[in-house]
Length: 215
Image (cartoon, rainbow, N blue to C red; front, top):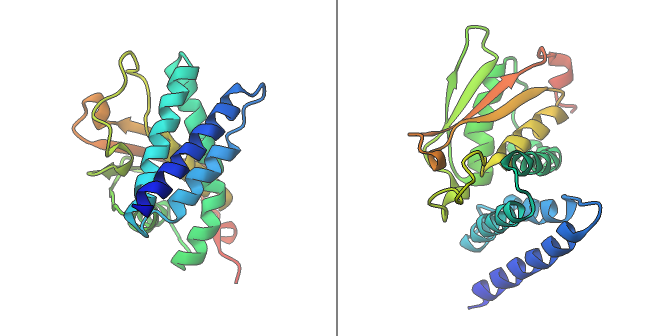
């Protein structure tokens, strides 16, 4: 019973923060972003934290859809919030994963899929390279925890990228290790596609000396 009470309390705290946030004349994603970050950091530890993250995110998207008429504005806000989370999450990731220096975009993408997604979301997307220059990759998600309780997009929201937070997280984390990338959803099962696919296009030449972790 205590677990359910804690979850309810956390969701109530989120709801209170969201009302303050969205009524503010100068909205900021910091408060809710930090709540999501805290839940994400402890996602794999127990079912309570998993549910907190998924339900909090669902409440966030629902509130955004009420406050913004255009899907593009919701998508932009989710990406911005994700970017902020990613810039903070990278420090925890590097400390916990002890990953070695990467020499190619392919290696970086493999680490995102096999280490980062596994560490924080408990899934391992498959990776596919999309061009001969080997700077465009796809992450194919067979399972997406963020949509565990979502069957379809809200009515009239066909352009909504429900999980756009993930794109922002990846983009923000990469930027903190001096890698500029365009991260977007290419396919989405919530929109009727057969798979969920995130595209990563690296826009800046990999500079090994910048990516190397300081010892």
